[in-house]
Amino acid sequence: MGERIKKLKEIRIHREGTNELAYSLLVLALIAAGCWNALGNHIVFWVIVVIFCIAWMLVLNFYRCPRRYFNGETEKLVVAPADGKIVVIEETDENEYFHERRLLISIFMSPLNVHANWFPVDGRVKFVHHHNGNYHKAWLPKASEENERADILIETPDGQEVLCRQIAGAMARRIVTYAKEGEECYIDEHLGFIKLGSRVDVYLPLNSKVCVTMNQPTVGDQTIIAKLP
Image 1 (cartoon, rainbow, N blue to C red):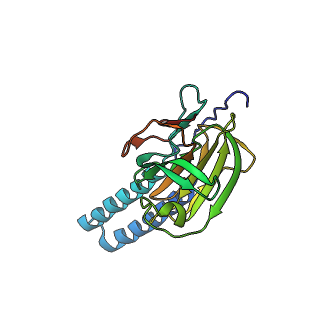
Image 2 (cartoon, rainbow, N blue to C red):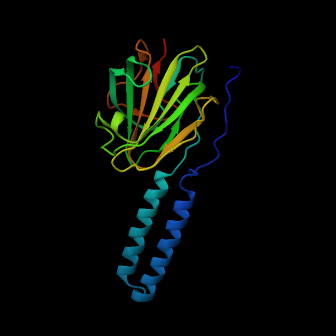
Image 3 (cartoon, rainbow, N blue to C red):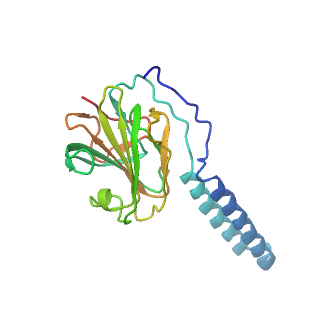
């Protein structure tokens, strides 16, 4: 596949949040101006301002987009596609695409985590499928199959197939996927973004070596979760 491409990530606030942050700041400013006209320099006004500032900062924190690079060789490595914690490590029957048993590793993202998603392996995108569905709590087992989701199948340079699944949760109502069928993809590149708490599943060959444990925190594009056979 040639030399691995490293793309600079200069964006500190994710592009998915720029409009929402700007509009919400404008709305809060207008409300604060109205409160000032009604209350003047009163302690109630300053309490409202503090609450608004905290709320906006929480939204700002949600849309942060750290610049990250994976240091070292990536051959046969699977890195965490998201920040969060490991909630599933198990063998499972994957009957939609592979029709065989696969190793499933799942990462749950809370609303406080970075919600950008990264490609877990280097390779080529074979397909991208979006499925409409329900909005069960993301950590429930049925969420993987019944919730709204986007499936991205990646073929690595040595022919291994890895399925990465973005899953909406009870709060997450929008999945954004940047992966395009037929394009080469690399660790360090953004796969997509999920708004609010949600989950990312990775289906690996059964004899892959697991490198994480249950409830272990993960850092997207940094934590090695498995090694391919």
